[in-house]
Length: 315
Image (cartoon, rainbow, N blue to C red; front, side, top):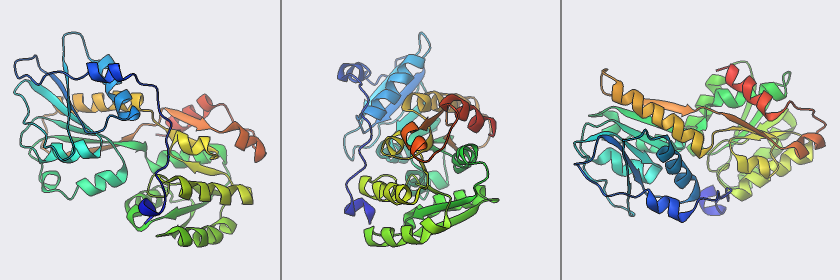
């Protein structure tokens, strides 16, 4: 599989001071005022930025308790004073859903495939609490809205996927009812090259999904090279893909995701409905464009803020 064949895609590291992360860690205390408890198992820059934004959003007098979980460590039982618990990233989410309790739970910064791996858990199938899932990637409908804004009369869209990408492909197919969607599956590097040779002549543009291809540098670069060689624009779901040579992407930053996660937690805390799982895709607040690639393709595109307005207006 691509996870073993290719090294992980190196995403841009944001400058987050270690001191800012460390000062977020507070002692677990049931005597504190009701607030937000955040569970983390990953200290890398995107997650640290997410938590820092949560701290900045906290209202005066409310608390944010950050609990760092070591590998395999179970999440602690909730304190009676907790209003909402938020697990950041898939490892923390896996620990959080297995612990008992009825406090509302938000699982944030998950990919669609992360969520699919968690949803088979008995705790997700028969929840004892309100659970909100915030995906880190925008919905496929939003990505299609961006492609339509950039190439309004082009409808042949090529996609290479892996077998694990089936949930993403189904979502894309559902959203692309009036598109000529071309999908080829590639379980390994050799198959990727063959799939691209089939797709490129049949496509007006290529879309890189946030899956094992989109998360691996060599696989992503293979798609970008195929697009560049044929003069086809390549769209994706990350800043890194655009910087590497993609034309455009609709994205949400960790700070924007923190705002959406906080709003989801407030909604769960206020809910009086039956227990269940609510899933939200990231709301793409930003469109990224590679101006150099656009010029090379002979495209004159609107400014990023104008494209952002068009994408969000279709929601």
